[in-house]
Length: 204
Length: 204
Image (cartoon, rainbow over all chains, first blue to last red; front, side, top):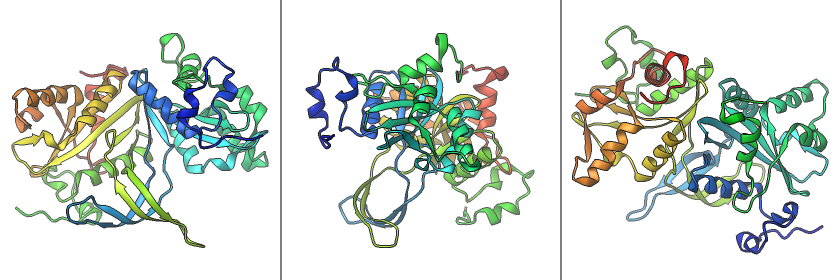
C-alpha cells in the first residue's frame, strides 16, 4: 500500500467530499488536519481552539541592526501540558493528538506521564479532555476520552498491556467524521457525547 | 525612587505579608508573580492556568551525535492569542498581563489588535476574559474585564484617548489582593465578580 505523502491542499481540492471518507484524506498529517479544522472553527465562530507553540529554551539571541532579532542557540523543552486547548460552547476543551502507524493497537509510549497528570487536572476541574488518535493506515481518527485513557495508562504499570487495542479504541472512543472543511470534526463528537441537550453535561 | 531589581524569592521570604501590601512586592515582575501564583494554584488544585510558550519560527536545527538537537536559527513570531489561559471551577479563563511605568494611565499601545480580536472571541464563546494591569510605581495590579477594555480600544480610533486613565482602571477594574503564596491572587476577584453564588454567571 502506498501513500502519496507530501500532497496537500492542491490534491485535496480535487476530492469529491461525498466520496468514501476513509480514503479522501490520505497523505495529510493529523496535525495539519487539526490545524485546518481549528482554522475553520475559528473563521466560522464555532470554537476557539489553538495549538500551543513548541516550548523552546532560548539561550542566545543576536540583535542585528535594522533587522529582526535572530535566535542563535535554543533547545527544545518538554511541554508541560497537552498541545491543544480552547473554548467551545462555554466549555474548556483540552486535548492531545497522536498518530500511529500500527494497525492493531495504539502504543502508550506516545504519551508522557506529565501529560496524563495534566489531563487528570483538567478533568477534575470540569474541562472536556480527550486524546485524538489516528490510525494512519486506515486513516480513522477517534476521540478517546481522557477518563478512559487513565485506566489503560495505570494498567501498564500493573503488568497490563503497553498499548490500547484498536478494537478497544473503537469500542470506547468515538470515530470522528471527516468533513470537507473540518477534516477532523471533533466538535461534532463533543456535541453528541459531552454536551447533551445543549446543556453542560461533562463526560458521558 | 529606586527599585531593588533582581531580588526574587530570597528577598520576598523576609517580608511580613501582613505589612502594607503596596510595597511588599517591589522588584518582582508581573510575569514572575503570575507564574508563581499559577504554580501555587496548580499545586493546591485551585486552578490550572499556564502561560503559553513564546512562539518561535524555527529555521535551522542541528542534530549533533549523542547530544540534544540545537536550534541554530529561529525568529520570534507574533502570538495569535493572549499569553495565559486555562480552567477554573469549570470555566475557561483567558487573559493577558501588562505592566506600565506610567503613573496616571495605561497606554493602549501595550495591546495589539489581534489580541483584542482573540479576547472578543473568548467573551463571545462564554469564557472569562480580562487584562491584568500593573502600575509598577504603585505596585497595584488590577483585573480589567475584557468587555470594558473593548470600549476604550474602539474609542481611540474615534478621536478618543490612546490610554486608559488610572482612575478609570481603578473604577471599572478590580484591585487584586497580594497574598504571600498567591502574589497576584486574581482567582479571588473571579470568585467575587464573575462566579457568583458558586454559579456560572459570566461577567458582572
